[in-house]
Length: 425
Image 1 (cartoon, rainbow, N blue to C red):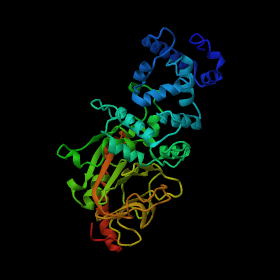
Image 2: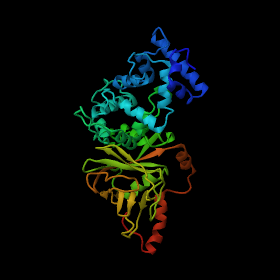
Image 3: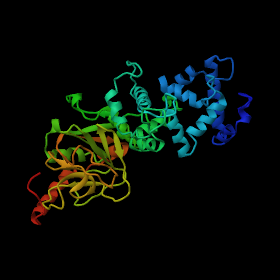
Image 4: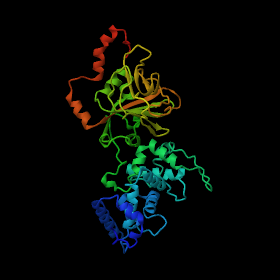
């Protein structure tokens, strides 16, 4: 199939192998696409030009150039994309094994084409990515508009490979895979570049952030790029809208207010803390915040860092110490506050019920390090966002059960009777 496009197709075993990964309908669709792009290229033959290819897939600058080189098998350098090239590239990049796909992406990052993936290569790719995802129509490609954010994502990469003849330390393939694990949005985007942007390219969706109009946007910790980063691990239906439920500068430092606000929608929440060291981090809670005397939750929860390094830490399965929500307990073995991972008094992340202090330790629950500069943290700003889903909306309209905080108050008299309640909130 495709022999009419190029007399050499039957000679390349990769074409036959890649063709088998597609259905007949998919191959016919690829053939039609290639014919259409070739016609636009005015190439006097069944070939697609670099400009038409990059425009169709929304890839510009060095990243677009590099992708075209990879898709056309690099060594030819004839600036002609054949139908066979397209089938082989998509067969590897979209239908290949995990190792094949990641090896393709790793090669894609070498935008300079010098055989190594250096910091400058990664910086160039990230700038192109942010320009693409956030539609920076008014900026020049490669501008400094995302400079600080680019560095935050670069800081998650480990450049420790020494290559002979290169002064710059580079990113090894294994360290690249680790980087992708820490940044799932980046991995998702880089794995979907041969899907046109207008077809809902994975890795491009940014949740719409909703908050009251009287809140100064400059106060908000959750920038769009951070929401995109956090959303990389979430299913599509959780990436529509996120609503600000609590902001310490607006709602004050009352744990009652805090817990009442973040628990009333009964859906997943995103907790973000900026501490007095300037570090920004938090956790995604998949289950509602409800009073417990022990850990609860499921394996959809995770911890994350936003600044000065962007990373996501998923559950390792080492234990089920996922969420913690203790209210009005007087025992030191049940600290009042909310937390994620680790163990009692040694959480992956813990925010005290006083809201003015907490701690973060490395923990096996999420395989996460200390999220801040020091283990003891002193929050400067606390935010919590509600993830709006159809399921959450349906439950919200059911009503009749009262808020979590109301149920806490109903229990309080009994707690006082048995000596477990603490008078302070």
